[in-house]
Image (cartoon, rainbow, N blue to C red):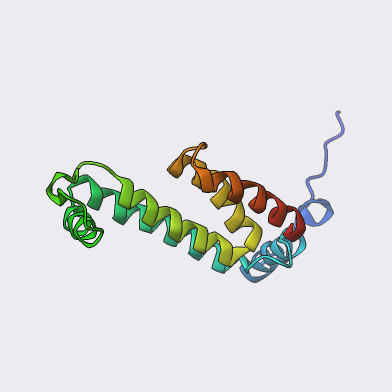
Amino acid sequence: MANKRKITSGKNNIGANVNATPETKEQNTADIFEKYWPKSFASPRRTVFLVAASLLTAAIVFPTASVGGFTAFKISLAELLNLTTPELVSPANYDVACVLWAMTTVLFMGLVHPCLGIGVLLLLRPWLDGIRFFPTMFILPGAFICFVFCG
């Protein structure tokens, strides 16, 4: 007759954690965040909130711009700046929406850590103004220097 293997319970399994409860699993997840999350950053919960707020801002601002929601603001701004024909302001572009979203995203990421705010500024500034825009030539090297010293 062949030898039959005796089936044992999970007590001898090295990987099995018999005493695992939802609280210990949550504690293990919290330990991972504490172990790998940089101490100088905001808490992970606050970071998730700020990223969600940035995405919510984009979800509100860009559809508003697509239906011409900023046209009255653009015309009043053109009148305030004494442009000769404020009626010629295009309602179909996204310039105000891009600037509002970029400013809030830089602010939110700067609240997580200043280097992240500078990094977002480095990514968005040339995209909004163009690389040949004169102040960009000064803000990019300055931001790189701040990023090196803050990072």
